[in-house]
Length: 423
Image (cartoon, rainbow, N blue to C red):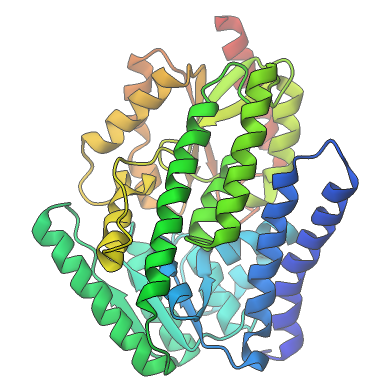
Protein backbone atom coordinates (compact mmCIF):
# COMPACT_ATOMS: atom_id res chain seq x y z
CA UNK A 1 0.00 0.00 0.00
CA UNK A 2 2.98 2.29 0.39
CA UNK A 3 4.73 1.46 -2.87
CA UNK A 4 6.33 4.16 -5.02
CA UNK A 5 3.76 3.77 -7.81
CA UNK A 6 0.96 5.14 -5.63
CA UNK A 7 3.11 8.04 -4.51
CA UNK A 8 4.24 8.99 -8.00
CA UNK A 9 0.75 8.84 -9.45
CA UNK A 10 -0.60 11.44 -7.02
CA UNK A 11 2.09 14.03 -7.61
CA UNK A 12 2.45 13.23 -11.28
CA UNK A 13 -1.24 13.96 -11.78
CA UNK A 14 -0.61 17.53 -10.62
CA UNK A 15 2.57 17.92 -12.67
CA UNK A 16 1.06 16.43 -15.81
CA UNK A 17 -2.06 18.61 -15.63
CA UNK A 18 0.01 21.78 -15.09
CA UNK A 19 2.26 21.02 -18.04
CA UNK A 20 -0.73 20.41 -20.32
CA UNK A 21 -2.24 23.75 -19.27
CA UNK A 22 1.09 25.51 -19.91
CA UNK A 23 1.27 24.08 -23.45
CA UNK A 24 -2.35 25.03 -24.16
CA UNK A 25 -1.82 28.58 -22.91
CA UNK A 26 1.38 29.02 -24.88
CA UNK A 27 -0.40 27.86 -28.03
CA UNK A 28 -3.25 30.33 -27.54
CA UNK A 29 -2.19 33.96 -28.10
CA UNK A 30 -5.36 35.19 -26.40
CA UNK A 31 -4.44 33.63 -23.07
CA UNK A 32 -2.71 35.67 -20.39
CA UNK A 33 1.05 35.12 -20.30
CA UNK A 34 0.88 35.08 -16.51
CA UNK A 35 -1.43 32.05 -16.64
CA UNK A 36 1.28 29.86 -18.17
CA UNK A 37 3.82 31.25 -15.70
CA UNK A 38 1.61 30.28 -12.76
CA UNK A 39 1.13 26.69 -13.86
CA UNK A 40 4.82 26.34 -14.71
CA UNK A 41 5.66 27.38 -11.14
CA UNK A 42 3.25 24.73 -9.83
CA UNK A 43 4.80 22.08 -12.06
CA UNK A 44 8.30 23.04 -10.90
CA UNK A 45 7.25 23.00 -7.22
CA UNK A 46 5.83 19.48 -7.37
CA UNK A 47 8.59 18.17 -9.65
CA UNK A 48 11.18 19.25 -7.10
CA UNK A 49 9.17 17.58 -4.36
CA UNK A 50 8.77 14.38 -6.39
CA UNK A 51 12.51 14.19 -7.07
CA UNK A 52 13.65 15.28 -3.61
CA UNK A 53 14.49 11.81 -2.33
CA UNK A 54 16.67 10.77 -5.26
CA UNK A 55 18.31 14.21 -5.35
CA UNK A 56 19.28 13.92 -1.68
CA UNK A 57 17.18 16.91 -0.62
CA UNK A 58 15.75 17.41 2.85
CA UNK A 59 11.93 17.70 2.75
CA UNK A 60 10.00 19.63 5.39
CA UNK A 61 6.23 19.25 5.27
CA UNK A 62 4.39 22.23 6.73
CA UNK A 63 0.80 23.25 7.34
CA UNK A 64 -0.94 26.36 6.07
CA UNK A 65 0.24 29.90 7.03
CA UNK A 66 3.69 28.57 7.83
CA UNK A 67 6.81 30.66 6.93
CA UNK A 68 8.07 28.63 3.97
CA UNK A 69 10.46 31.49 3.19
CA UNK A 70 12.71 30.16 5.98
CA UNK A 71 12.85 26.79 4.23
CA UNK A 72 13.81 28.37 0.92
CA UNK A 73 16.60 30.30 2.63
CA UNK A 74 17.99 27.00 3.95
CA UNK A 75 17.62 25.17 0.61
CA UNK A 76 15.10 22.81 2.17
CA UNK A 77 12.32 21.43 -0.04
CA UNK A 78 8.93 22.56 1.30
CA UNK A 79 5.70 20.62 1.01
CA UNK A 80 2.59 22.66 1.78
CA UNK A 81 0.34 19.90 3.05
CA UNK A 82 -3.17 21.36 2.72
CA UNK A 83 -2.49 22.96 -0.66
CA UNK A 84 -1.14 19.66 -1.96
CA UNK A 85 -4.39 17.97 -0.95
CA UNK A 86 -6.34 20.77 -2.65
CA UNK A 87 -4.30 20.38 -5.83
CA UNK A 88 -4.92 16.64 -5.95
CA UNK A 89 -8.66 17.34 -5.68
CA UNK A 90 -8.43 20.11 -8.29
CA UNK A 91 -6.48 18.19 -10.92
CA UNK A 92 -7.84 14.68 -10.35
CA UNK A 93 -11.35 15.45 -9.10
CA UNK A 94 -10.99 12.48 -6.79
CA UNK A 95 -9.84 12.42 -3.17
CA UNK A 96 -12.00 9.48 -2.12
CA UNK A 97 -9.09 7.10 -1.52
CA UNK A 98 -7.23 9.58 0.70
CA UNK A 99 -10.36 10.44 2.68
CA UNK A 100 -11.14 6.74 3.10
CA UNK A 101 -7.62 6.12 4.35
CA UNK A 102 -8.10 8.97 6.81
CA UNK A 103 -11.32 7.39 8.03
CA UNK A 104 -9.46 4.11 8.59
CA UNK A 105 -7.18 6.03 10.93
CA UNK A 106 -10.23 6.94 13.00
CA UNK A 107 -10.62 10.54 11.83
CA UNK A 108 -14.27 11.58 12.02
CA UNK A 109 -16.07 13.21 9.11
CA UNK A 110 -16.50 16.39 11.19
CA UNK A 111 -12.75 17.02 11.00
CA UNK A 112 -11.54 19.36 8.24
CA UNK A 113 -11.28 17.23 5.10
CA UNK A 114 -7.89 18.58 3.92
CA UNK A 115 -6.44 17.39 7.23
CA UNK A 116 -8.25 14.04 7.00
CA UNK A 117 -7.00 13.75 3.44
CA UNK A 118 -3.49 14.64 4.51
CA UNK A 119 -3.35 11.92 7.11
CA UNK A 120 -4.82 9.41 4.69
CA UNK A 121 -2.47 10.43 1.89
CA UNK A 122 0.61 9.93 4.05
CA UNK A 123 -0.73 6.67 5.49
CA UNK A 124 -1.30 5.21 2.02
CA UNK A 125 1.93 6.57 0.56
CA UNK A 126 0.20 9.01 -1.78
CA UNK A 127 2.66 11.73 -0.81
CA UNK A 128 6.42 11.48 -0.25
CA UNK A 129 7.34 11.10 3.38
CA UNK A 130 8.95 14.25 4.80
CA UNK A 131 12.14 14.37 6.81
CA UNK A 132 10.52 16.78 9.27
CA UNK A 133 7.03 18.01 10.08
CA UNK A 134 6.41 21.70 10.83
CA UNK A 135 3.16 23.23 12.01
CA UNK A 136 1.62 26.02 14.05
CA UNK A 137 -1.69 27.09 15.57
CA UNK A 138 -2.51 29.38 12.62
CA UNK A 139 -5.38 29.67 12.16
CA UNK A 140 -7.44 26.79 13.58
CA UNK A 141 -7.42 23.87 15.96
CA UNK A 142 -7.39 21.38 13.07
CA UNK A 143 -4.01 22.76 12.02
CA UNK A 144 -2.69 22.85 15.57
CA UNK A 145 -3.50 19.17 16.12
CA UNK A 146 -2.80 17.65 12.71
CA UNK A 147 0.95 18.21 12.91
CA UNK A 148 1.33 15.75 15.76
CA UNK A 149 -0.60 13.07 13.87
CA UNK A 150 1.35 13.59 10.64
CA UNK A 151 4.63 13.45 12.56
CA UNK A 152 3.55 10.12 14.07
CA UNK A 153 2.40 8.68 10.71
CA UNK A 154 5.63 9.66 9.00
CA UNK A 155 7.86 8.70 11.93
CA UNK A 156 9.78 11.93 11.63
CA UNK A 157 10.78 14.74 14.00
CA UNK A 158 8.64 17.84 14.18
CA UNK A 159 8.51 21.42 15.38
CA UNK A 160 5.45 23.40 16.52
CA UNK A 161 5.37 27.20 16.38
CA UNK A 162 3.25 28.79 19.07
CA UNK A 163 1.91 31.93 17.38
CA UNK A 164 0.49 34.57 19.79
CA UNK A 165 -3.08 35.78 19.24
CA UNK A 166 -2.41 39.49 19.63
CA UNK A 167 0.09 41.77 17.93
CA UNK A 168 2.22 43.66 20.45
CA UNK A 169 5.94 44.29 20.79
CA UNK A 170 6.30 41.57 23.41
CA UNK A 171 4.34 39.04 21.39
CA UNK A 172 6.33 39.74 18.23
CA UNK A 173 9.55 39.21 20.21
CA UNK A 174 8.14 35.92 21.48
CA UNK A 175 7.31 34.85 17.92
CA UNK A 176 10.81 35.76 16.71
CA UNK A 177 12.15 33.52 19.47
CA UNK A 178 9.93 30.68 18.24
CA UNK A 179 11.18 31.15 14.69
CA UNK A 180 14.79 31.25 15.83
CA UNK A 181 14.30 27.99 17.74
CA UNK A 182 12.83 26.43 14.60
CA UNK A 183 15.86 27.51 12.58
CA UNK A 184 18.13 25.76 15.10
CA UNK A 185 15.91 22.67 14.93
CA UNK A 186 16.11 22.58 11.13
CA UNK A 187 19.87 23.14 11.15
CA UNK A 188 20.29 20.19 13.51
CA UNK A 189 17.97 17.83 11.63
CA UNK A 190 18.91 18.77 8.06
CA UNK A 191 22.60 19.51 8.50
CA UNK A 192 22.07 22.76 6.59
CA UNK A 193 22.84 26.20 7.95
CA UNK A 194 20.58 29.19 7.65
CA UNK A 195 21.78 31.55 4.92
CA UNK A 196 20.87 34.88 6.50
CA UNK A 197 21.84 36.87 3.41
CA UNK A 198 19.58 34.69 1.32
CA UNK A 199 16.74 35.15 3.82
CA UNK A 200 17.23 38.92 3.63
CA UNK A 201 16.90 38.72 -0.14
CA UNK A 202 13.76 36.64 0.18
CA UNK A 203 12.29 39.18 2.61
CA UNK A 204 12.98 41.94 0.07
CA UNK A 205 11.18 39.89 -2.58
CA UNK A 206 8.27 39.25 -0.20
CA UNK A 207 7.90 42.95 0.49
CA UNK A 208 7.77 43.55 -3.25
CA UNK A 209 5.23 40.75 -3.70
CA UNK A 210 2.92 42.15 -1.02
CA UNK A 211 3.01 45.55 -2.72
CA UNK A 212 2.14 43.88 -6.03
CA UNK A 213 -0.74 42.00 -4.42
CA UNK A 214 -2.07 45.31 -3.13
CA UNK A 215 -1.75 46.85 -6.60
CA UNK A 216 -3.63 43.92 -8.12
CA UNK A 217 -6.37 44.33 -5.52
CA UNK A 218 -6.69 47.99 -6.48
CA UNK A 219 -7.02 47.10 -10.16
CA UNK A 220 -9.81 44.65 -9.32
CA UNK A 221 -11.91 47.57 -8.07
CA UNK A 222 -12.40 48.66 -11.67
CA UNK A 223 -15.81 48.28 -13.30
CA UNK A 224 -15.74 45.94 -15.11
CA UNK A 225 -13.16 44.06 -13.07
CA UNK A 226 -10.25 42.57 -15.07
CA UNK A 227 -9.40 39.36 -13.17
CA UNK A 228 -11.13 36.07 -13.94
CA UNK A 229 -13.94 34.88 -11.60
CA UNK A 230 -11.91 32.43 -9.48
CA UNK A 231 -8.52 34.05 -10.10
CA UNK A 232 -8.01 34.83 -6.43
CA UNK A 233 -7.05 31.18 -5.88
CA UNK A 234 -3.87 31.85 -7.87
CA UNK A 235 -3.00 34.81 -5.64
CA UNK A 236 -3.59 32.62 -2.60
CA UNK A 237 -1.38 29.82 -3.92
CA UNK A 238 1.46 32.15 -4.86
CA UNK A 239 1.84 33.32 -1.27
CA UNK A 240 1.36 29.81 0.16
CA UNK A 241 3.91 28.06 -2.08
CA UNK A 242 6.33 30.66 -3.47
CA UNK A 243 6.88 33.41 -0.88
CA UNK A 244 9.93 35.47 -1.73
CA UNK A 245 10.86 33.55 -4.87
CA UNK A 246 11.93 35.74 -7.82
CA UNK A 247 9.72 33.84 -10.26
CA UNK A 248 6.68 34.66 -8.12
CA UNK A 249 7.60 38.34 -8.27
CA UNK A 250 7.86 38.16 -12.07
CA UNK A 251 4.48 36.40 -12.22
CA UNK A 252 2.80 39.09 -10.11
CA UNK A 253 4.42 41.89 -12.12
CA UNK A 254 3.23 40.29 -15.35
CA UNK A 255 -0.28 39.77 -13.98
CA UNK A 256 -0.44 43.35 -12.71
CA UNK A 257 0.56 44.72 -16.11
CA UNK A 258 -1.98 42.50 -17.89
CA UNK A 259 -4.79 43.61 -15.59
CA UNK A 260 -3.76 47.26 -15.89
CA UNK A 261 -3.97 46.98 -19.67
CA UNK A 262 -7.45 45.47 -19.44
CA UNK A 263 -8.60 48.23 -17.12
CA UNK A 264 -7.16 50.84 -19.50
CA UNK A 265 -9.05 49.33 -22.42
CA UNK A 266 -12.24 48.84 -20.39
CA UNK A 267 -12.25 45.05 -20.80
CA UNK A 268 -13.67 42.91 -18.03
CA UNK A 269 -13.10 39.30 -17.05
CA UNK A 270 -16.73 38.48 -17.92
CA UNK A 271 -18.82 40.15 -20.59
CA UNK A 272 -21.14 41.65 -19.73
CA UNK A 273 -20.32 42.03 -16.03
CA UNK A 274 -23.63 41.69 -14.18
CA UNK A 275 -22.81 40.61 -10.63
CA UNK A 276 -19.81 41.68 -8.53
CA UNK A 277 -19.32 39.13 -5.78
CA UNK A 278 -17.46 38.79 -2.50
CA UNK A 279 -16.10 35.30 -1.84
CA UNK A 280 -15.88 34.18 1.76
CA UNK A 281 -13.58 31.20 2.31
CA UNK A 282 -12.54 28.36 -0.02
CA UNK A 283 -14.81 27.00 -2.77
CA UNK A 284 -14.84 23.27 -3.53
CA UNK A 285 -11.64 22.53 -5.44
CA UNK A 286 -13.24 19.79 -7.50
CA UNK A 287 -15.80 22.32 -8.82
CA UNK A 288 -13.44 25.15 -9.82
CA UNK A 289 -13.85 24.48 -13.53
CA UNK A 290 -17.63 24.45 -13.17
CA UNK A 291 -17.61 27.63 -11.08
CA UNK A 292 -15.57 29.41 -13.75
CA UNK A 293 -18.01 28.25 -16.43
CA UNK A 294 -21.19 29.28 -14.63
CA UNK A 295 -19.61 32.60 -13.67
CA UNK A 296 -18.95 33.36 -17.32
CA UNK A 297 -22.45 32.20 -18.19
CA UNK A 298 -24.13 34.59 -15.75
CA UNK A 299 -21.64 37.45 -15.84
CA UNK A 300 -20.67 36.92 -12.19
CA UNK A 301 -17.15 37.51 -10.89
CA UNK A 302 -15.47 37.49 -7.49
CA UNK A 303 -13.91 40.92 -7.05
CA UNK A 304 -12.79 40.67 -3.43
CA UNK A 305 -11.98 38.07 -0.78
CA UNK A 306 -11.47 39.73 2.63
CA UNK A 307 -9.69 36.72 4.14
CA UNK A 308 -7.43 35.90 1.18
CA UNK A 309 -6.46 38.98 -0.82
CA UNK A 310 -7.09 41.99 1.47
CA UNK A 311 -3.61 42.45 2.97
CA UNK A 312 -2.92 44.35 6.17
CA UNK A 313 -0.72 47.44 6.37
CA UNK A 314 3.01 47.36 6.88
CA UNK A 315 6.37 46.89 5.18
CA UNK A 316 9.11 44.30 5.60
CA UNK A 317 12.74 45.18 6.38
CA UNK A 318 15.41 42.94 4.78
CA UNK A 319 17.88 44.18 7.41
CA UNK A 320 15.74 42.38 10.01
CA UNK A 321 14.81 39.18 8.19
CA UNK A 322 13.49 37.05 11.05
CA UNK A 323 11.57 39.96 12.55
CA UNK A 324 10.08 40.60 9.10
CA UNK A 325 8.96 36.98 8.77
CA UNK A 326 7.18 37.40 12.11
CA UNK A 327 5.69 40.73 11.04
CA UNK A 328 4.39 39.28 7.78
CA UNK A 329 2.41 36.66 9.71
CA UNK A 330 0.38 39.50 11.23
CA UNK A 331 -0.19 41.11 7.82
CA UNK A 332 -1.69 38.12 6.02
CA UNK A 333 -5.43 38.48 5.26
CA UNK A 334 -6.27 35.27 7.12
CA UNK A 335 -4.94 36.74 10.36
CA UNK A 336 -8.31 38.49 10.77
CA UNK A 337 -9.77 35.07 11.60
CA UNK A 338 -7.12 34.14 14.18
CA UNK A 339 -7.86 34.32 17.87
CA UNK A 340 -10.91 35.98 19.40
CA UNK A 341 -13.03 37.47 16.62
CA UNK A 342 -12.84 41.26 16.67
CA UNK A 343 -13.19 44.32 14.45
CA UNK A 344 -10.34 43.20 12.20
CA UNK A 345 -12.67 40.71 10.52
CA UNK A 346 -15.83 42.81 10.57
CA UNK A 347 -14.19 45.98 9.30
CA UNK A 348 -12.42 44.03 6.58
CA UNK A 349 -15.74 42.71 5.29
CA UNK A 350 -17.52 46.06 5.38
CA UNK A 351 -14.57 47.89 3.80
CA UNK A 352 -14.35 45.39 0.95
CA UNK A 353 -18.10 45.44 0.30
CA UNK A 354 -18.02 49.21 -0.09
CA UNK A 355 -14.73 49.65 -1.94
CA UNK A 356 -15.41 46.91 -4.50
CA UNK A 357 -19.08 47.81 -5.12
CA UNK A 358 -20.23 44.33 -4.20
CA UNK A 359 -23.70 43.15 -5.33
CA UNK A 360 -23.70 39.94 -3.32
CA UNK A 361 -21.53 37.52 -1.36
CA UNK A 362 -21.04 33.76 -1.54
CA UNK A 363 -20.21 32.12 1.76
CA UNK A 364 -18.50 28.75 1.18
CA UNK A 365 -19.41 27.05 4.45
CA UNK A 366 -16.99 24.16 4.67
CA UNK A 367 -18.79 21.68 6.90
CA UNK A 368 -15.54 20.52 8.51
CA UNK A 369 -14.31 24.02 9.35
CA UNK A 370 -15.50 25.27 12.72
CA UNK A 371 -13.94 28.69 12.11
CA UNK A 372 -15.90 29.17 8.93
CA UNK A 373 -19.28 27.91 10.06
CA UNK A 374 -19.18 29.65 13.44
CA UNK A 375 -19.17 33.09 11.80
CA UNK A 376 -21.95 32.61 9.23
CA UNK A 377 -24.68 34.58 11.03
CA UNK A 378 -22.32 37.29 12.24
CA UNK A 379 -20.89 37.97 8.79
CA UNK A 380 -24.29 37.74 7.10
CA UNK A 381 -25.71 40.28 9.56
CA UNK A 382 -22.83 42.66 8.84
CA UNK A 383 -23.35 42.40 5.08
CA UNK A 384 -27.12 42.60 5.33
CA UNK A 385 -26.75 45.93 7.11
CA UNK A 386 -24.95 47.07 3.97
CA UNK A 387 -27.78 45.66 1.85
CA UNK A 388 -25.55 42.90 0.46
CA UNK A 389 -27.36 39.53 0.07
CA UNK A 390 -25.39 36.44 1.08
CA UNK A 391 -25.68 32.93 -0.33
CA UNK A 392 -24.49 30.24 2.08
CA UNK A 393 -23.25 27.16 0.25
CA UNK A 394 -22.74 24.12 2.46
CA UNK A 395 -19.82 22.36 0.86
CA UNK A 396 -16.39 20.82 1.37
CA UNK A 397 -13.06 21.81 -0.10
CA UNK A 398 -12.07 18.32 -1.30
CA UNK A 399 -14.92 15.91 -0.47
CA UNK A 400 -17.43 15.74 -3.38
CA UNK A 401 -19.94 13.69 -1.37
CA UNK A 402 -21.04 16.77 0.59
CA UNK A 403 -22.53 18.63 -2.34
CA UNK A 404 -22.85 18.05 -6.08
CA UNK A 405 -22.44 20.24 -9.13
CA UNK A 406 -26.20 20.06 -9.69
CA UNK A 407 -26.96 21.31 -6.17
CA UNK A 408 -24.50 24.18 -6.48
CA UNK A 409 -25.84 25.18 -9.90
CA UNK A 410 -29.41 25.28 -8.60
CA UNK A 411 -28.47 27.46 -5.63
CA UNK A 412 -26.29 29.78 -7.69
CA UNK A 413 -28.97 30.24 -10.34
CA UNK A 414 -31.51 31.14 -7.66
CA UNK A 415 -29.05 33.60 -6.13
CA UNK A 416 -28.30 35.23 -9.47
CA UNK A 417 -32.03 35.61 -10.08
CA UNK A 418 -32.34 37.36 -6.72
CA UNK A 419 -29.47 39.71 -7.59
CA UNK A 420 -30.99 40.42 -11.00
CA UNK A 421 -34.35 41.34 -9.44
CA UNK A 422 -32.56 43.88 -7.25
CA UNK A 423 -30.93 45.70 -10.17
